[in-house]
Image (cartoon, rainbow, N blue to C red; front, side, top):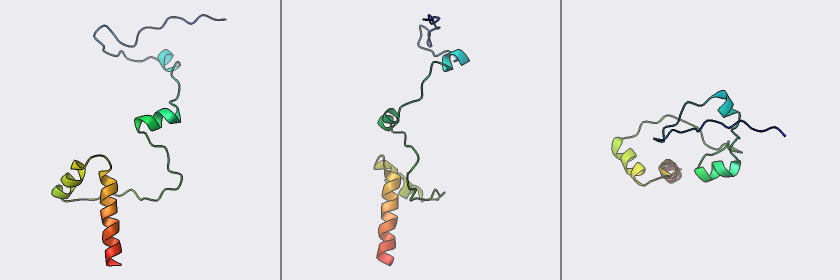
Length: 88
């Protein structure tokens, strides 16, 4: 069995991270889907249902929805859906 060469620490005494080398990168492993879900990284949608657009909103509207916390874009989408239903 081959002995692994001791690698240089990734941080110095002050906690600063040094520049990573190709040798460092070889030790990395891909993140598991469970870890990505836990930290909030989404994977590709199985059946994309929404269209990415650029939209200009009034500052007061944007501030209001952003102040309601995470998920504010979904709440804007819901408000627009309700408006469409009322007009139909």
